[in-house]
Image (tube, rainbow over all chains, first blue to last red; front, side):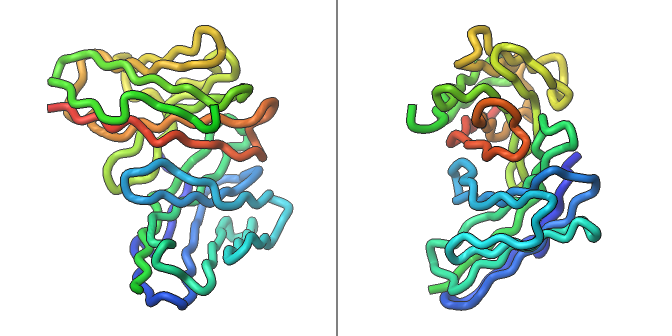
Length: 111
Length: 116
């Protein structure tokens, strides 16, 4: 069974708006990562946040992590049509050998 | 190579046929993972290798699934007597040496398997 769960399942916004998607997970983690997947393609790593970090930035991406609530959020600012994709969070099991993915948020950015 | 390479990209198999999917990880990456992704779902863990050792195969759905990495580089995922429920994208990923935890895992484009 999958560890993470993203919400919303689908999100549609206008170009230039911000997009926020959330991820909840079940057990203690070492790290949480966010990935993007364009239709028919593999997953592309976006950002990793460690369990002792609360916030991390990378370009237009901002990730937060709340280990007490077992949740994370991904914010994409000033969205572009090219940001249209599915976004997944992935957490590693305490042993670090497995990475568990959620079911993803499908983001559509309308030009 | 520059990235994780998987082949074939697309495979149509008749039910009952055996298939073999190949993964060429990033050169020097010790850890290798296989994931299965059904349509509209997130990737599900299948198995994990560290060099040639298969350290975790808890995600393999049945004994029809078998993975190997005999020389600690290229890996093959074999599915015997394919069933329709095996239709999915099979993703391979590799990560930097030493511990996988905390390191980025890099994915290939996947092998799309359709069982008819």
